[in-house]
Image 1 (cartoon, rainbow, N blue to C red):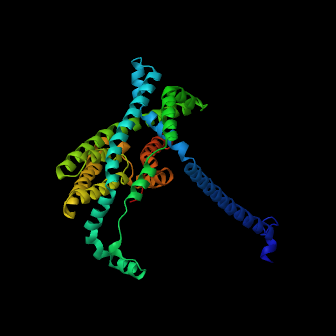
Image 2 (cartoon, rainbow, N blue to C red):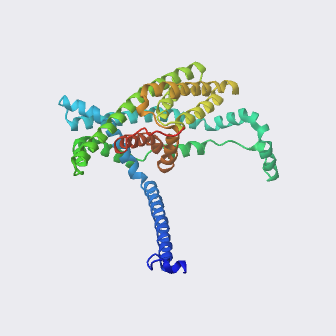
Image 3 (cartoon, rainbow, N blue to C red):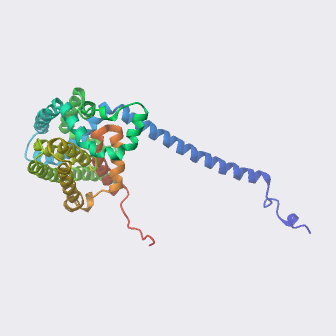
Length: 365
């Protein structure tokens, strides 16, 4: 007897069933591809939105971050019957005065450098001739193209102009920042309450409240600690550059303090500035290297030994995550975005601890 004839009619394979299985598999793969395409399009649109609206979002987000950092202080002062409007007014006035004083001190130094830009460019060109041997191939190419390298001059004015346009915020951005900071501090408690009440379940409300409290506490603790450390770094840099004989050591102390808020990029900028100032101010190239080496040693000790011990393991961030955040937000929002990248990581870390806490799974060796 034929084997297939003994099987029930329903159990016999059919071309229709195979086609249905293939169709479902194709539809599943097509749906996954569609999901990936939708997510990719959304991410690209988000990046474009962040980039083209940076003139508004950067001051608004910066004000919210600073207001969140000052939240625990505002709450403590409120317990001593200090009204929110008074605290917000004092904060805005103090930050405005600090900005004006910093602008005056920095502008005097930068104006002095700009006035002597031609002299500085000539000094840089003469002292950097030692590197011409390593650029022999470039010189040969310049000769082949009909240019004379000995007549080339180093023009530093475009560097100053580009840096000023890149770092200086517009008046409208400053107005948006101070207005947002004032009204955020004025209505911070109301915003917290409304954000918590968006959740209907009581457990979710408690979780949202814990996340908000942790974000405020972690940001305040991080910025307070880092500010003290950066002040020490700025003071030591000022003393070191003064002993080494660099011109205007107060400027480099302020740069070391401000730029140390931005990991990697900030210290690298200070190293370049110290090297350029050393070439101009000091007689030899070897002496010009002392200030950058001193600063690199200082920041290495601070970044690898001092700050992790003081900040603690809870706020110690992954260096690779910091680098990715710096790259992305620096590309989107410039130096302010690089400054905000670490607070963004702290916020994400606080949310992650409550949404998906670590369970310490047993992983294979």
